[in-house]
Image 1 (tube, rainbow, N blue to C red):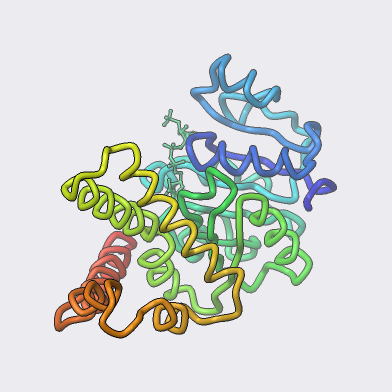
Image 2 (tube, helix red, strand yellow):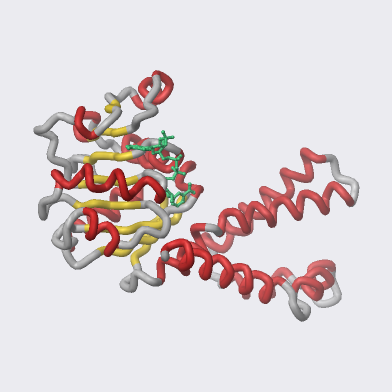
Length: 271
Ligand SMILES: NC(=O)c1ccc[n+]([C@@H]2O[C@H](COP(=O)([O-])OP(=O)(O)OC[C@H]3O[C@@H](n4cnc5c(N)ncnc54)[C@H](OP(=O)(O)O)[C@@H]3O)[C@@H](O)[C@H]2O)c1
């Protein structure tokens, strides 16, 4: 992956740790990574066996990273990003995972000439099964884009959009999406318990049904629609359930309304 690239990670909370574990698992050398994290304690240090620093001022002045990755909360970006101005050069990409913070915003804190990537990962990145979608400004070269893809692939799959406004849609689908699937699992589990299954078995059924079905869509060449039709025998149990789920104001309308609400909120938060 990016073993020959030097990385500076700013912020080592939930997402920062997910990225860092993915990189190290993929073979990133210890000497090629630095992490700035004010709360770095012994647990974090020993988990990663790396030298964390508490502020940018403590970094070795001879460390010139190819990537500076911002994994801090959006509300602290105003204060933090300008501290990294000294790393601006054509060979260094600034990659942000902060929700709602545009490339224009980052350019205003760094400079218009800085190569900048804005990306939206999702929570399953923490178990290496994330979905990250990214947008780059025009200063990012083809090679830098390839390296950024490899770097983000350390925690799952990666896609790119050519229009930055589509990041709001991505947020509404894959960014917030894990919560929709968790809700589906919760609902299946609750119904199973109400119908008499013990809680452990109810949870197992709900989880394995969702992961198995998703695994099957991936592994077969059939569309989800075809797989649904194949499993629905006329007059059978699945058909009885789908008549409820696919009735008027059913699941499709509900999901569509939910996604639109999330997309609108993403846009509002970015303003
Ligand atoms: N979690 C998700 O599912 C998800 C999905 C997509 C995008 N994101 C984005 O990912 C970013 C990080 O989210 P998160 O959930 O990982 O948040 P988090 O767990 O709060 O991590 C942020 C980390 O940055 C640290 N930090 C604060 N000030 C710093 C500074 N001056 N220099 C370096 N590090 C500093 C924080 O320390 P303190 O605790 O001391 O503040 C914290 O450890 C956010 O911008 C979010 O929008 C998250």
